[in-house]
Image 1: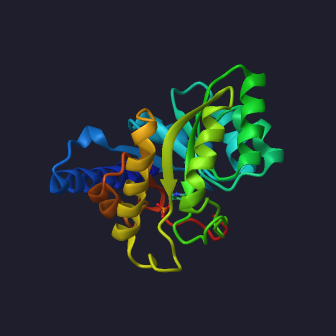
Image 2 (image 1 turned 60 degrees about the vertical axis):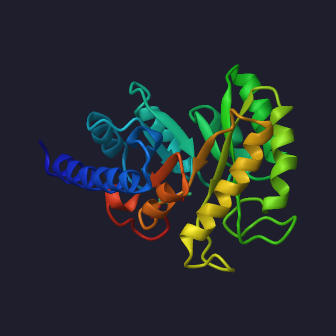
Length: 239
Ligand SMILES: *Cc1c(COP(=O)(O)O)cnc(C)c1O
């Protein structure tokens, strides 16, 4: 085992223990929560090691970084999640490797993703990114639509060929009433998910929780946690 493999194995075991403990504390089965490892800024060699350690879901937030990495790992059975703010001029590339885009936050992006998915003749999973600190009708600084914009986007995804509405995603806000209150933020996301599932039961993914707040996300009911730093180490700036 290389030093890096040992390091990632140890970190992964620690994160796994945290998720298991959080599930136990919440009275949830461990299988209800999927770990997505956020590999942004780290090399394809790390993705390959993680796959060897049993990881099957990875996430990236910049197409320039993700596209060559996904190409270098095309032989691995991995689900690739795109979690960054997505410009429409990157959509064609992203749809070439992503299985799920978690950062759907505006109608123009929906039509662009749909056109690309149709061209590739594939079905793309979509999560609507919710900005819990955005004003009504606005988008947040880190992407995401305000809660009152969810229905419009859900309807757009429903109507878009090549796209499948899988659920909701959020990042705990750094500003506004939810700043420093990840549990309250994730509870709010769960309420929004409950409302969405009332008419769209299949859209049951709830992606919330990162290295610092995965316990709060699992307690609130998240189905997917996105963990970077706790598995791979502290990223150099600009991650
Ligand atoms: C980077 C990132 C993560 C992982 O954050 P860590 O704090 O490193 O675990 C999760 N979600 C999104 C959207 C990210 O950009």
